[in-house]
Image (tube, rainbow, N blue to C red; front, top):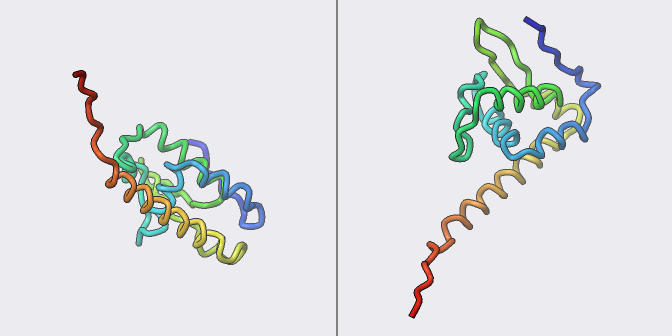
Length: 127
């Protein structure tokens, strides 16, 4: 089994972070990890925003987050436990992640309000 590589804190870039969090599924995963009080496995995220995500796709999202330096992954038997590197990144780029997460939450709430306001589509009647 290949060892997992994590970039050193000095190799983490703002561009890498922004790129990794530009995908809606990845930012949702990261937001949930950041709010978690313990390590989470890939299978905890098979349902994101009412979408079922295949495990193979999830592992690619986790790899992108890991390579950007946003998460740390550790193997425990057949499980991969993931935690954020928020504290390290906060020291390197103060305020960056809280600003991104606040914007993500605001956008999510706005989308949810918009989805509730949309009227049901009506069928056109011919007369």
